[in-house]
Image 1 (spheres, rainbow, N blue to C red):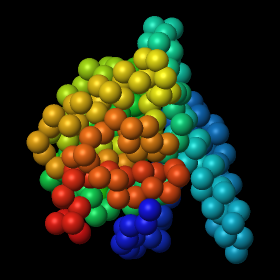
Image 2: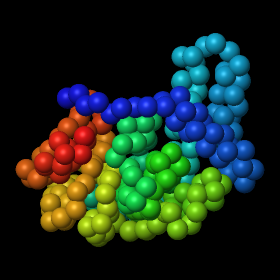
Image 3: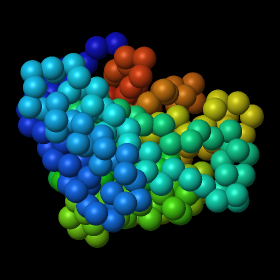
Image 4: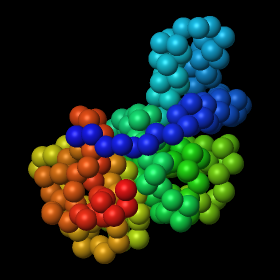
Length: 248
């Protein structure tokens, strides 16, 4: 299902993401804790002086994955909660959603990431497209602490990001404008209940909403208020029925 995302300034956005990554890699405290970030950054810098674009792209994605995985640990209690909900452990959603989100995140938008991990994806949405607030919902206290460290290093103002250390099933979704999630649970047993609960919350709200869902499981639970307007097998996008035609 094709949709014209009008991906303007792709090189500018890629360079800005690289700038964020290199800024994180230069932080000495972060580098001591996660030397793989520094190693991946050094490899990318070295390759940028060559004409090998394929290797540059691989190195760029390796650096993204290294940063995304920083702090990916759970306490025994957090792991038990995640296991009980058939949850996944911190998979990277990729660069494509970041590139495609531009026309859906306005300056007054509230963006939420359900199961944010260390918050890298949400921070990059804020870094690329400054907006009113990013809400990062994550079960792991350690990953939130790493994300707050990322936020400080990237000089993103404190009032621009709200960190919530809780199970995503407990969080109200009434006021958000853009929802990002990477398949937080397996669609089985208690995982089904999670998707049912999320969908009921989304359907009960009155505001317009855009959803970027990675490895999507929502489509089987959302009602006719939502229309799917894009799917490429990795990223699936939904919007409130009737709003797509009037907005684009």
